[in-house]
Structures are given as C-alpha cells and as structure tokens.
Amino acid sequence: MRKKFMILFMIVLADMIGFGLILPLLPYYATEFGASEFIIGMLTAIYPLGQFFAAPVVGRLSDKYGRKPLLLFSVAGTFISLLLLGFAGSLIVLFIARLTDGLTGGNITVAQSYISDITTSKNRSKGLGMIGAAFGIGFVFGPVLGGLLSNISYSLPAFIAAGISFINLMLIIFVLPESLDKKEVKDKKRVPINLNALKKELKKPIIGPLLLTRLLYSFSFSMFQTTFALYSIKKFNLEASQTGLILAYVGVIIVIVQGFVVGKISKKYKDHNILLTTLSIMAPSLILWGFAPSVLFLLLILIPISFAGGIFNVTINSFLTKLVKKEDIGGTLGLSNSLESLSRIFAPLAGGLFIDISGAYLPGLIGGVIVLLSLMLYSYYIVSNKNKIVYEEK
Image (cartoon, rainbow, N blue to C red; front, side, top):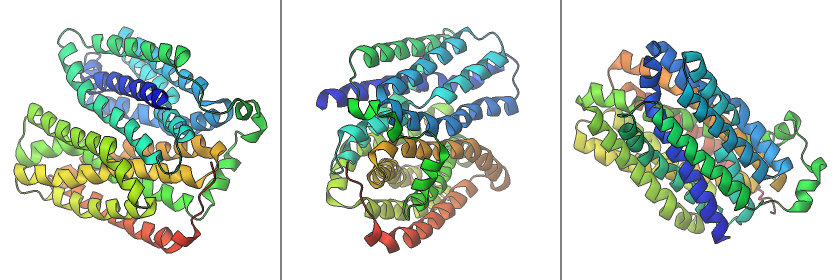
C-alpha cells in the first residue's frame, strides 16, 4: 500500500506543479493576443466551468470502468491541452486548450477515489491529506518555476508542464496498479451511468446537506483566495513579490496541516465534529481578515484560516466517502469537486465586485457571514441527526 501511496503522491505532485507552472502566466499569455481584462476573466473561468460538468461524469465512469483508465484519460487530456497551449497561435486556441483541460480534468477526483479504495475508514483522512499535501506543494513551487521560465518565453512553461504530464502517463501505464477488484470492474451492471443513481445518494439525510455546506464554504474560501492579491494592494499597498511570499506562507501551512496534522486529528475525533470545529474557526477568521489593521495581524489571522481550510477540504471528502457505497465513491467525490469548481467560477467575480464597492473589507465580511450560514445549516442538518449517520461497509 505504501508503494501505491507514493506513486499517487508523485502523480498528483507533478500534476499540480504543471498546473501551477502555467496558471499565473495565462493573463500575460492572453495579453499577447490582444485579450481584454474581461476576456482574460473568461479564459480563467472556462477551466472550472469544464470541470463543473466533467468531474461527476469522470468520477462516475471511474466507479464503473476502474480508476486507472480514467486517470489515464484525465492526464492524457491535460497533456494534449498543454501542448495546445504551448503551440497556441491565437486566443481561440488558448480557450480550446483550457476547455479541453477542464473537460478531462478529473485527475484529483480519480486520485481521491483511488485513495478511498485502498484505505479504511480509520486512515482515509490521512490518505486524502497526503494527496492534499501533494496538491499544496505543487501549487507553492509551480508558480515560482513558471515565473522563472516565463523570462525565456510564455510558451516554455506549457511545454515543461506537458513533459511532466507525459511522465505521469508513463507512471500510470507501467507502474500504478488498478485499485478496484477485477471482478468489480468486469461487473459493469453494478454502476449505472445516469443521474438517477446520484440523485438517490443526494436524497440520503446527510449527503445533500454536506454538499450544500461544501458549496457555501468553497465559495467563501475561493473568494478569499482569488481576491487576496487585489485585497493586498487595496489594503496594504503590497507589491506582487510580497503578496506572493504571503500566499506561499499560506500554502506551506496548508501542506503541513494536510500532510501531518489531519491524519492525527481524524483518529481522535469524528468527521462531523471536525467539520463543525473548522467551520466555527473559519467564519470569524474571515471576518477578521477583512478588517485586518496591519500586515502583522494579517499574518497571524492567516494561521487559523489556513489551518481550518486545510482540514475542512480533506475531512469533508473523507466523510462523504464513508457515507456512500463503494461503487458510488467516484461519482460522489466528482459531485463534491464539481461544486468546488462552480464556486471558482463565480467567487472571483463576486469578490472583485465587493472590493470595488467597499475597498477591501467586504469579501472577508461576506465570506465570513456565508460560512456562518453554512455552520448554522450544518448544525441543523448534521449535528442534530448525527445518531442517524450510517457508515457504509467498504
């Protein structure tokens, strides 16, 4: 099992380094083709839009046909999209490249499903936390490498990222084994590919409220992430390099939390109690972030935000996998990640509008109030029904 963990960790790490390489450079790349700020915003939004539609489908297909073939499909889509990006000669090709990556980008969903297959309920949070840590490490170092490579050309990071994706393909083909039992994969009838199967899961007393909590929380946290640079300029007049260092500081905290802390916490406390605590921490922390009076206070308040954020994202997916049947894990995780993608479409627009209206504090205030609302809904639906929670046998 340790070997499988390490292979999957390296695949996700390499994938996120590749993603981080090109993401910060897209606005500059698009500007070369005369794109306006609105068009650049659309280019940024088209990737999560593709993921919103694709993630549940890719996850569900992995339930039916196995994790390995869908992981191959997803990484191959990323590889092709990065080649298109590197060779792009027009704005249209840039859009096609990003949409292709979004529509095939179920890497994280399938990786999470794979971890759920090879772990038990007791150590699942730890396994998912390691995937989250790989995600965070890649996202911390990817933009730094991308910035250095962009001094040569904007297309070079795309080609380097494509090379990383190709290595991932080789690892999946020749090294990574299938996580589902061969008999389960052969029994195609066990997992129907239709919306009714997912609707059935959503009607369970806990699943629907959990996914609603996921959506509200993700919107607030995405607004924090996507407006942070603009917030830093408006609030403290920070330079890009200073903002980058602060975001790296946040990333490091999240990596430490997901890699070393969440597994230990999950062994001592129930998932529903962990989520209750993280929501209780996040709501006031976001509000205080909005009204931070100094950079020192900002650095301090980012600690509970990063801590709660790192634990929440791992724990809610772990909780979801324990509540559904094994053959529904991929589809449910895909739906969870789809809602997160939906939040990343609208959160930047809302956050930018709020900053235009208020200056800097409103994204934190609104985000904190939304998390507080999700905490109230969570407490009503989940905590009051905790005795009705039924864990599926895996």
